[in-house]
Amino acid sequence: MKEKLLKFANKAVDSVKRLNNKRNENTERFKMTNILLTVLFPVFIVCMAEINQHKYLSKFVIFCAERPTVMLFNIFMASLIFAGLLLLFKKAWIAVLIQSFGYMALSITELFKFGTNGNHLIMTDMKLVRSVKSLTSFAYIKITPMLITYVAIVVLYFAAVFWFNPKLKMSILKRIAPAIACLAGCLSVILIPAVSKPVYSFFDVDQSVADNAFKLNEKFENNSFLAFFCQTASENLANKLQAPENYNDNTVSTIMNVEVEEKAFKDTKPNVIMIMSEAFADFRKFEDQIDVDFANTYDSFDNVAAQGYKGTAIVPTYASWTVRTEFELNFGLPVKSLNDPNMPQRMLLDRAQPTIASYYKDWGYSTAYVHPFMGSFYSRRRVYSNFSFDKLIFDEDFTVPVNYYGTYIEDKTVFNQIEKLISETDDPLFLHTTTMQNHQPYDQGLNPDDEIGNYLQWIEHSLNDFETFIDNVNKLDEPTVVLMIGDHYPSLKGENSIYDQLGINGDNCSVLYEQPYVVWSNCELDYSSMPEQVVSTFYLPYLIMDLIDAPRDTFIQAMTDKMETVPVYSTNYNSAIPDDNELDVLTYDRILGDIISSNAIPDELYETAEEAEEE
Image 1 (cartoon, rainbow, N blue to C red):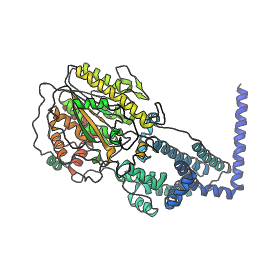
Image 2 (image 1 turned 90 degrees about the horizontal axis):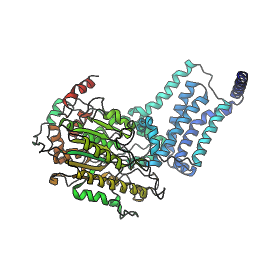
Image 3 (image 1 turned 120 degrees about the vertical axis):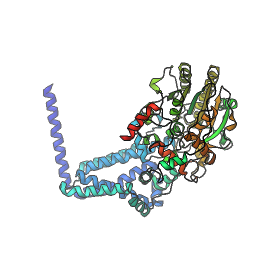
Image 4 (image 1 turned 180 degrees about the vertical axis):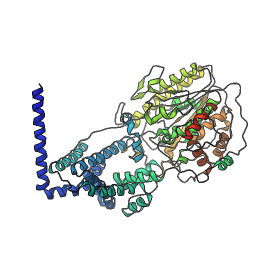
């Protein structure tokens, strides 16, 4: 056996040697072919990455005719990258392999992402690369003959480069400086505003401000994939949050200099349950515009609302980035003040956080966070451990039987877990849950292609279970207040979705940031103080505090007062809303600053916070 293996290995080595000898001969024999393969590669890989987006060659040709300078920009950037790689590795096949893989991987990811939720790929999405396993459960991954063809063409080009074997004959000392110069030039276009802005202007790359998801998609139409990816990366890096110029002790103290309305809990402290329902949205506002049968979809929601209070809040996101809305509910602060990051929790310092939960903990509540999905996604388990939750319950931590509805854990399971926690907890309970059942994909149902129909089926099932949950809580001998709101409108496919049928665009999409919310209680509450006008989501925790007569500190009072003067503070909903220095200062102070504002971190956690700041 050993002899056979050794013989096979020797044959393999001999074959490799003969192949390499032949390739080395090709280097000298086919010089013109090698020059063409090398010079044309940046043009080739740009075309393949873009054709993959347009799907059809005709559409790509039309884009090139309409936006030729943008294509020149793409080729310019690809040439810098390729030149840098070629100079570093000397052998063209290595440079071609690296760049081909990178460009096509990004192009395919963009294709699937837009086809899944109607949002285009941007640089900050790369932060989720560690959660690729989770993301694959969301995505519509469809391998088409065209995609296979385009990948095959790229593979064939690489095979040709490998066979003909173009390479440089310069020494490493002569190659290193120009290699660094090429790669540095490429990076400077993306990283340095003083360089990127004139370069984008020269090539007529669209640099318009996209303050909502639809305007961002319109920018993609002007720039297509590669230029869009570069320009939005530059934009995000230039938009990095800076401390407000007037951020200091005196400014914060001045903002906190408010007259605090005296509040105190009455005889009992009620449980407070905050339910952020995944992708819940009320499409009935469009019933005159779309041919959809809503039947009894929202009856349970209306039944619960009739027993309590129903209002409208402005959520900070559409179709994805659940953690934006989750941040506003957990902190009572606007993501607009953080420059609207897709993942605000990634900005947090590793320290005890002044969250809404920390207030309730300070008031003698037990606190819990429940999310029926992986604790690693969005780094929730690690990050939320600083939020003053006594319990973090993710998919593997449930203590009730777990059932699925479609792809994800059923909302009924979440509600059962909440009921169990209420029953088992001696102290009053503050709980935040982010559900998962109604997350995309919506290709499960009677008709896999009827996304909106399948979505409404999921929503009806969820709302029926929500009403049952309310009925069950009503029977418990515990005063309880429940807030329920959706995090965003559902992610629907990028092409021919219901949003296309409605004619939604960057100028009229504000309606998609309006979410109904309900407040229900089995104890007597006075809803007369609830706002009639729309308010941003981050104000909702203070409205609940007011309803239950929770004590106020100067921060709660300042935020409550601010709701009267700036009820909506959201870029995506209305980019014309001017910046509010007070909200910006308070948000920075509590998220990245020194927490000068009166904070709700329990006494035993102050030392932890101080140690984190010192580090």
